[in-house]
Length: 111
Length: 351
Ligand code: SF4
Ligand code: SF4
Image (tube, rainbow over all chains, first blue to last red; front, side, top):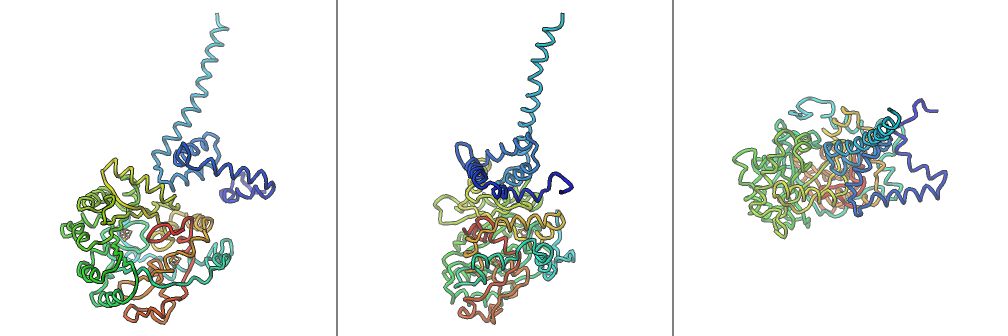
């Protein structure tokens, strides 16, 4: 076994997952590629969404891939950082909005 | 920011043999990545052959007013290699007798050659279909004596091709130097003012985009859209086409890749993106590159690696179409830069 769970070199081998299940692997990559095509959203917008989601799910492979993808598309670091704050705001908001639940509970229990 | 060429700094990489060693050692020697010739052999495209000459690219000197970090020429104010009038006369002889449809002047900053205007005037008389000058834009604003270049280009119906790494100041200045963005914008306005780059104008103005770092260019058409939108909205600037060009791992860009520990990853990116369909149209299949001292190369990159053409004829004064056509192109691993993704050439994508 490798000494670390993550190896940057593994990202390039992503496509190999098809080797152990060709049908599902191929379906996944077909779907994946279709998702990122120009649509109602531009491929550029999708790249920024992917970058924000990558940080939300904290996937180092995805962060690596979509930082590179953004640079290739000419996306600036300011735009990248702003997209991360969207992820951060939703993440923080998701915790804090539960504060209402806490407040409700406190209000119910306290005399 | 850089202020001196590798040559002036006496860097190890100023030695082209050392660059070629690096490109053949390490990951390519131990078989981790295939060598370029083996890779193209997989699709029966080895050896790479040069067809009939269509584009004559003349490098009139390595002197430049800028010292861009990625420069594959290792150009800069400290480079003194300049084409003489005598060599230009030899080039003119060839321009008159070949059927090449494109003449492409490059550098350095070609405008800094003291005989540049004379050469353009003489070459324009030869009536070549597409006469390109690769201008770095800032030269137009660098000194009063260059301010009238847009008018001069217009007079001789020159096709201007200019580099512009990004539509934002930050990214541009980082690659090319402080103040480059503002000067480039002003130069583009000057070119627009005389009619260059306006839709339907016969005065062609194209921009060259190359990535400011260790990554490949994205889709050329999308980048063109972004550039057009931003330059029009922010500065009311127009241009015709954008060429997305991949940085080849030679000279200052190679130096940057090694110093930033990106070399191996970058070579992986290039090899992973290898596109067999791009091979048939790489530049060297229809181009000949002439150096400031008149020697012949398969392309400007080979010129910078001092890889002269594989032919009995090695100098413009001995130019012989029959002997040069069909020659085997000299390659190394830098060639992967021309075949990655949609491919890359001085005219942008090729596949
Ligand atoms: S990239 Fe062009 S403008 Fe920059 S230093 Fe090299 S020749 Fe000059
Ligand atoms: S680097 Fe030059 S020789 Fe190599 S493929 Fe590109 S154009 Fe041809």
